[in-house]
Length: 339
Image 1 (cartoon, rainbow, N blue to C red):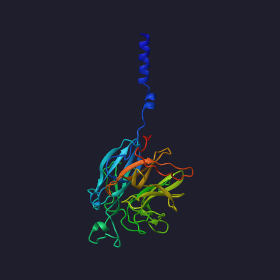
Image 2 (image 1 turned 30 degrees about the vertical axis):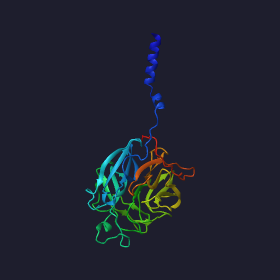
Image 3 (image 1 turned 90 degrees about the horizontal axis):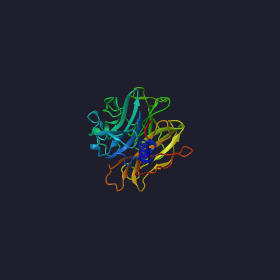
Image 4 (image 1 turned 60 degrees about the vertical axis):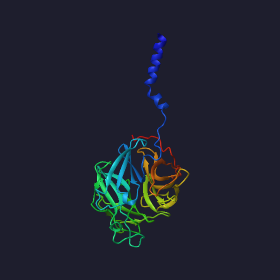
């Protein structure tokens, strides 16, 4: 009788031991891609206790007319938020909505994006009778929730003019420690930098009166993204052609957000897992030195120009602050809840 009772107590203790369960539990990983569907140009951000990713819906320009968003508390389990913004809300957007960038300010959530394939007369494919070619640029939408629905903030593009040869696309907004919101953007091999004004309705001029300064690093094509770590400002961008396997990510380091930015090297490019890896962003778990790169890539074999998937992998640094080359994986990253 005593033996049976002792066995019962031991079994009960083992069943109620959370430490034992944690030791035996296999770690969870996100897997790559991290969610189903063709998605590209992902921007990752932390809002409150959740990770958010805002990607391009990867399709032909005439079908690329909305944005979905994805949220997660642990980087592993992602919830889809359908159609947080589409052309029904942005009347001036006729096609090719892409490269969203999100930021929180004073209780509101702002979503920046490019729309229409705005061109200049000297560019191939420009049609003076096609208003998609000369009406569009970078827009801005606003919502009370990071999951939308978002509505047009200005009723027109925030930026539709061409400065220093840069197509007004691929914007990324970076809030510095002093509260300044820097605005990086640019296609066609030119990267510009401006400063958003206090209510995000336009731009504050630089000391010389210009609204935008060109800061283009060597090799730059498009897709700028900035982050700050240990007092170092990192500017990342994409090189090569977005439609093929030459697409890759390079970066520079500077002691201030305005540069100068001298190319250090490539950290993400094609390998045996995937090709066309680029247009990235980075996520930092608040209060830690845990960093992740969020990017798109083309599965092998690649069957279509727009068959791009969103992935996440660990981003690590050397002692001097330089970034180690990114190792693309199918496993993705381990669960890491925001606390």
